[in-house]
Length: 347
Ligand SMILES: *Cc1c(COP(=O)(O)O)cnc(C)c1O
Image 1: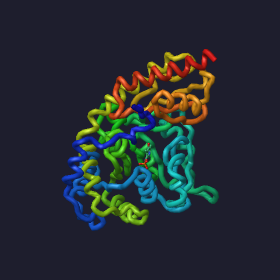
Image 2: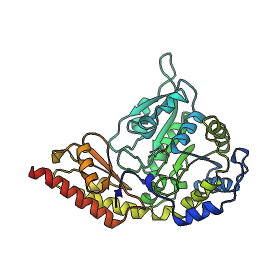
Image 3: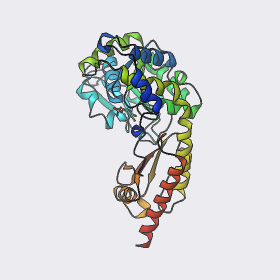
Image 4: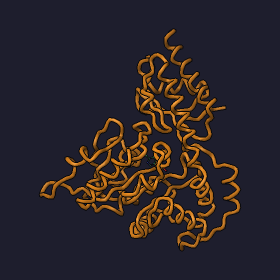
C-alpha cells in the first residue's frame, strides 16, 4: 500500500461524511436556498466570531475573492515571499484583482510589522498604494510555521491605523489553533477576512470558507458567481464540510505528533538536515542535499519503496501528515528514508 505524504488534501471523506452527504437536505445555493450550505456558512461565521461566511469550491477561489473585495486595480498586496497567493495561485491577484504582490522574504514565513512597515508605500507620484496585507497561518512552504496571535494583532492594529485591511490565508488555521491551543476566533479576531480549507486536514472532499463582515461576504458572493463558483445543490458537499468543521479540528494534534516524530527521525539520518524544533504543525520540510541525491532523485527512490511525497526544490522534500497516515506508516516512511540515504553512501 502506498503511504501518501504529498499533502493533507489527499484525505478521503469518512464513512460518517459519506452518510451525511447521502442524506443532505439540498436546494439551489445561487438562490441561497440550500439549507445545508446555509447551515455551514452560519456555523463557520459563529466559530470564527464574525458576521458571515461564504462556501467556495477551493481555497484559491476564497483568497482570490478576498483580495478582490479589499483592493482596487493598481494596488499592492503585501505578503511573504513564499506565500501561497504569490507562488501557487497562477498570479490570480494580478489576473483578477489587477494588483501586484509586494513580497517580503522571511526566515520562517512569519511576517511582523517591522518587516511590513518599510514596504507600505507613502502616497506620492511614483508608488502604487498598499491595498492589502496578507498573512499565511500556518505557513505552508515555510514548513507549517505558526504566526503567534500577538503578531497577528499587532500587524492588524498598525495596518488598520493606516486604513489598510488584512486578510489571513488560513488554509490550515485550525492547525495553527491546535498548535497554539487557542480557538481560531482568537487567532483571527482582528483580521478583516480569513479563508480556511475544509478539504485538507479537516478531511472534507471539497470546499473552503471565506469568513468576514456581512458587507465583505455579500460582495464576495457576487465575485464567486463571476468566477464560476455559484454551485447549485452544493449541500451534498457542504454536509461533509459541516462534519469536517465540527468534528475534525480536535484530532489535528495527532497529525502534529506524527510530524514531530518524522522530523526527529529525519534529523538523525546522515545527509539529511532539518531542525525538529521548527516543526510546529503537520508539515515537515527537510534538506537531502547532504546525501548526494537531489530532492527529485530522493523522491523517486522513496516512490519505489511505496512512499509518495514531493520535492519543494532541488534540495528539499515536503512531508505532510494527515488522518489517512498512521504513526506506524510514518515510522515506515522514516525507515525508507534511512534506506535511501544509506544506499547512496554505499555506491
Ligand atoms: C492549499 C492552500 C490554499 C488553497 O488551495 P486549493 O487547492 O485552491 O484549495 C491556499 N493557501 C494555502 C496556504 C494552502 O496551503
